[in-house]
Length: 165
Image (cartoon, rainbow, N blue to C red; front, side, top):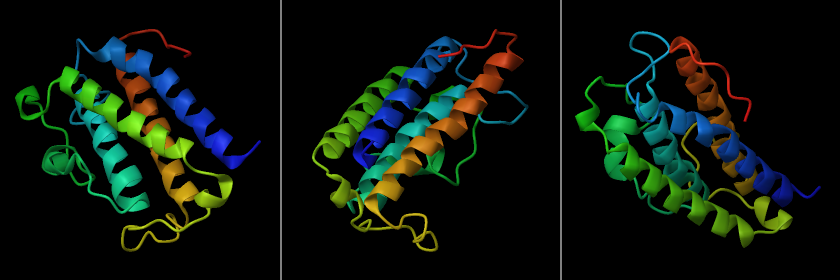
């Protein structure tokens, strides 16, 4: 399997295995697995924010289209219990879809050799993690798996049965 095919496959898997969980939590957006923990609305917004941060800013050296979300959804932010400070669930869903479609469209233009090119703007101190475009873009995927686990824990805390897809 070529690296580009593996990345494409993993993007499809993370999204298809996480979206049903997000849809299930839509009506309980501030639910968290632990008091003060990451709630579903923050996680969804944070994943969307980081699509722009990682794929566009770090890998491609372009502006993060979600830069205005940095204070509430960026890496240093913490979940707040006031849903009104966040974009609506629908806004996040729409903006995520647009961002992910841009990421996938970019991926379609790449070859395995292109994935070996350096990231354009790796974050200071994480140059080794973002050693190539392929390595950098794979962080988007692993980030989704990480937060998918938190979403599963939220569902468990709500007394819901596991979803296996």
